[in-house]
Image 1 (cartoon, rainbow, N blue to C red):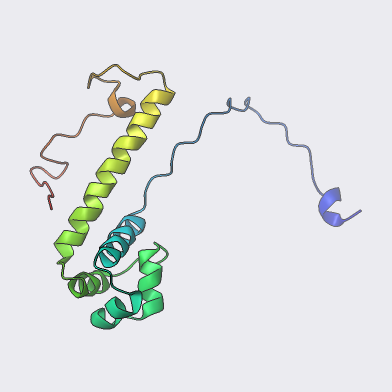
Image 2 (image 1 turned 180 degrees about the vertical axis):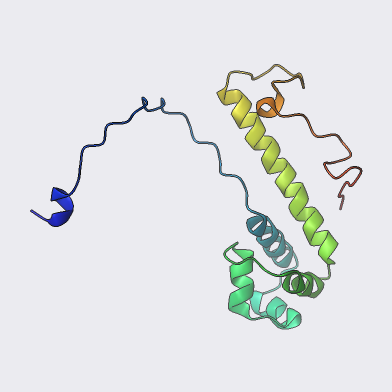
Length: 147
């Protein structure tokens, strides 16, 4: 018998375990969204990773990691990658912001479907898990990103 097996103790939960609830998709990370935008734009232009990395003067492995959401790129790196793709940094951030909004809306719908509030159609206190709805002008007091 190994030490690992002999040192295991029975754990008795203090509270009953919650019923199996389908897991919501995880909260999207900004680096995933930005990487997705960069990759989608590069592929839409039919360009290789090597081509864009050389034009941006960053290493190909690093750009690959940024595209896959494994690295949190600095604003300088993001601006260089955007410029290499013929975009400005604001374009990349706006596209990532749009994606974040759509994913957040999907998460809110999943959450309300799971709580039995589906089909209510109102934006009352039960909307989005009890949170106040965000005004159309955005959370930053009039800042609305559009591409």
